Image 1: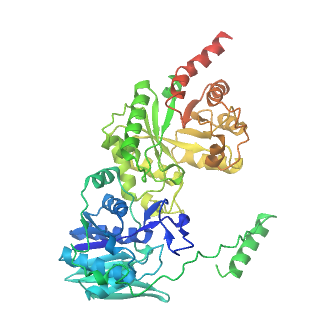
Image 2 (image 1 turned 180 degrees about the vertical axis):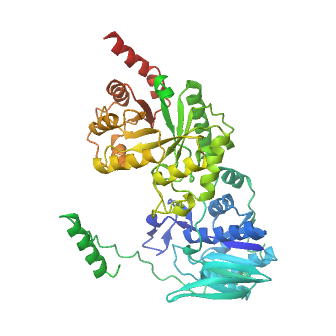
Image 3 (image 1 turned 90 degrees about the horizontal axis):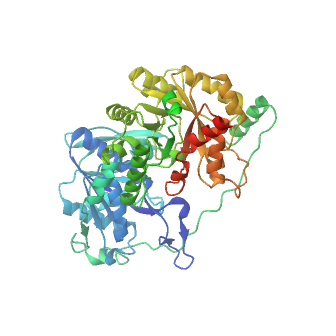
Length: 262
Length: 275
């Protein structure tokens, strides 16, 4: 099976700051990481490859420094990486990003399955995976927590939702987005990390993927971020339990019940 | 382990490079250089396993990839419970192939990125989570007689609880003990020596000048004046206070401290003979 995993370089959760002028996340000077949800998509693709054979290509759109997340992905089992980079991509919203990624997937050719994390931790939109499916006109399954089987051009997915899960059989080619319950991502080996450092990563420009200029970047983005605000700080809610252990345990249980946690 | 103590073989902690290292080549070179220096000194190189929950490369893969040559009996691998079953078996198999006999078996510090062994992975049926006890039993069962298994002792934890844990660890197959860092001496370590005179004990010497980091590492405030703390003097005091114990050197400075500690153990022993 030929698989593409779409990943994103995001600021480390605790480092995220918002520029008061531009209302955008400040990315300069802070540690960038591979979007944690994407690591589950990557692990699932590598597991499928290990069991059924095939190829895993990891792809991202971003500035040259985003290449680091592709190397990280290669160090845990992806076979190749592709970076979509160019000034014209700048300012793309989720729809324009989906378009660019879809064009690159078409250029790769013969792709059976596209895997994405359910969302990125910086934008939290959960729109790019479904957007790619829409751009390509492919079937999609979101919030996938298990892929019990794949055969004869179909995959079966267990999708998580608020009331439980449903089992969907979808025809390939398809796009899926996964939740973290799906697997336990592996950590890179030294051998993998060293191999990933040596691998050449092609950089594809808008022209190389045949993207129309009016459909990428700000021109191709039907949405605008008007304002971004950090979440309100969490209340420092500390409960000190003193007294005999049996009394403390009873208080703890009562408190957890009161908060609906038990 | 008695052989190490009798022959004044220091246990020198060496940390492998972190997974997110931005200068990996340089870090690998530094690791290899430290490893080789410890081997040349005839000391035991102790390689940590994701210490403090920081993701790092694993000891055996470092040795294999860098083609280092462990001397028999002079490498100790730390092994914690934050691995997949496949990884655990791979590490143990590599240790056997590399003739690494000593393992320090610890529960370890987890992180979101690390998998955790499940009880079924190590054949444990009576517990909800895997600790060093279940891991010790697994290694003892799967590799009988292959490894010498050590365990950690934390004198800063509530005493009764820590001694009860130690009983379980010894019962599960531990044959030597390494303490958490001790500054000069610690009454709970004294009790440990009284309680288990037959088990070789290695006391840990904190070789960093940064004493506040020690409090962080052990999880309890260690009351020590950061200004006057002298790690080498403290090491000498450990030799004086625990003459029958081995010593584990954590965060040893290879540039300046290494030369200062070479011969120190013998020197302290000779002091005693002279006096």
